[in-house]
Image (cartoon, rainbow, N blue to C red):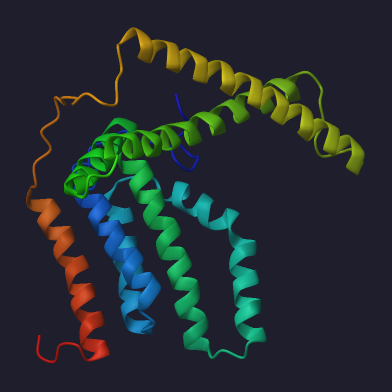
Length: 254
């Protein structure tokens, strides 16, 4: 079982954000990425940050999990603020850049905490299935993306267990010189690599037993339908896009 307070883990609880359709979550995240790349308005970025905070509260995931990720990236925020100051950006421009980073990181946290690996796999495969008309190998691409999504929490879990096991055997990572730390870290990641390779062989063997084949159409027992909360949250994302278009002068009357 994955650690609940690590990035990429699923927090099982019943909330309105958990009940969202995984395809809708992916579409909403793509809308946020579009706005983060192209929108430089301070008010729209602050509104995006407020929407992310509301989703964090409605997910019923303890806020300390989100704050752990925020605090672990504190040096990145300081570095970004220093770079903005070195380029003589004003305060609003610096706030826009920092808010974009916080929005992307915390939105990814919301998706990872509120979407199980199976739902993520279903959402990605369902979303990419709409591009089958382009005659692209969508099934293989979806399988690779799902494997990566499942591999990251597995790698973090194995690393955490290996670190605890080595610490219980007296290996000290902190109160030693630089060469001792380098040796301990190399030993740690060699063990992590060995354990993850063993786990990958087990997964591959289980898929062979199940006659897994990417060229065959796979059925799914999930029937995730679009509900009220999907329309509710997507409406706010669309309002952000309309506000961006109005700010750019593409549309005049809303």
